[in-house]
Length: 75
Image (cartoon, rainbow, N blue to C red; front, top):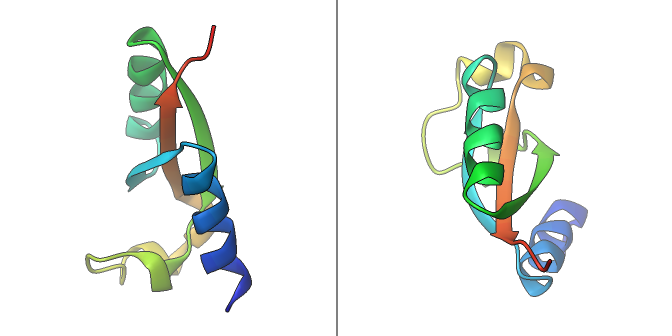
């Protein structure tokens, strides 16, 4: 099993739900919205092989993109 698949499975086991992959400025806006809704937010670097949609434009500058994971805040 490859390392990224293991990481994604680990996150899901810990209760994280994969939401979307985004870049700025929308990335920061979504993170803030999820936090305001009471979610914890975790960001992962882009892994094009895990995306279900076209990633051609993302592959030019992959460091710009992050995948958003959320889970209900435990507080």
